[in-house]
Amino acid sequence: MDPEKDKPDVGDPKAGDPTAESKIVDLEVAKPKVGDAKVVESEVVESKIVAPKIVESKNVESKSRYSALPGPRMNERRFAQVSRRELLKVMPVLALGAFAIPSFQDSLLKKGLGFSDWASARLFRRGHMATTFADGELTPFEKFPINGYDVEDPGVIFENWTLTVSGEVKKPGDYKLEQIQGLPRVRQNTRHVCVEGWDVIGRFGGARLSDFLNLIGADTSARFLTVTCADDYYESLDMATALHPQTLLCYEMYDQPLTRKHGAPLRLNIPTKVGYKQAKYLTDMKVTNVLEKVGYWEDQGYSEFYGL
Image (tube, rainbow, N blue to C red; front, side, top):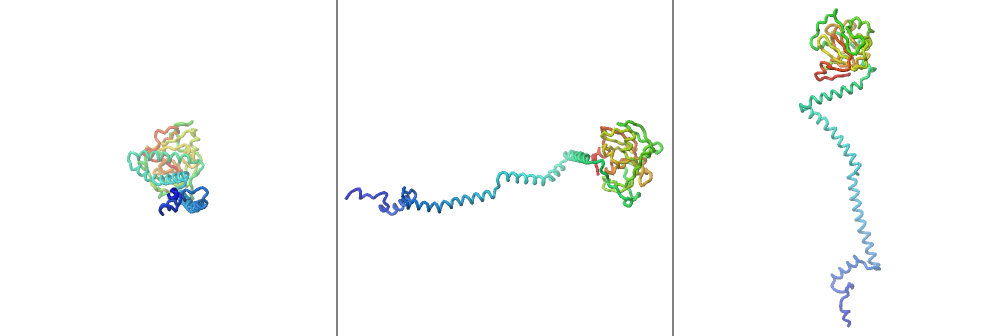
């Protein structure tokens, strides 16, 4: 017997123990011999069974991940929307918190009023008329409130009264009531609104302030008109309001001469403005580009423009 034939063949699965045979089979499957059709067929079957499962698993994971998390652009857009929404929600809280700090209160109020006046002045239209009312809607004269600054009657002596005009005008000087009454008279039923919270509908008569400014040769390109009063009250108007066709130098109420308690002999009637702008007991008027003082209440923190 040939000694070489007694040694088991390493490539022979029948040689040696069963375990070795199993290992060899596994090895043959894992590393097929070139040209072994059966082994190649086994690999193809294994590939068909295993590989698709792995690919499917990756696809599912990928779809799940991308459906839960949108792309970068969508994320940025949603984040911006949420950020704006949340900011709007907390703004009132932040504002209230700022107002709670005493050192910020005056500054915030002043800036808020300044912005409001700036916006109101730019929205104001000289051709836009305040609402007028029928005679049947008037508040009875005896129920029209009397609201004074200091005293109800500063004791003006009518016979000696004049309106002193100065500033950017061609005809400065003292003007008597008769000269003002000589201008075209306008009567209007308009609402009077008080900053204290009440309002009434009254009937007012007088000359358009614009007509009087024309009479005195006022420079209407100037920015302001100021008035002072017999009771030391003072007020100012922007020129656009002064030229509004419903702004009156008022000397009548309810078709009767203005009474002392309502501001005789002459007061302002401005239905486009709040009540404290409508000064009584006028004594002086100035056309100017510079305001040394704005108004009695404005200089204490009230709105400068306060249009209605």
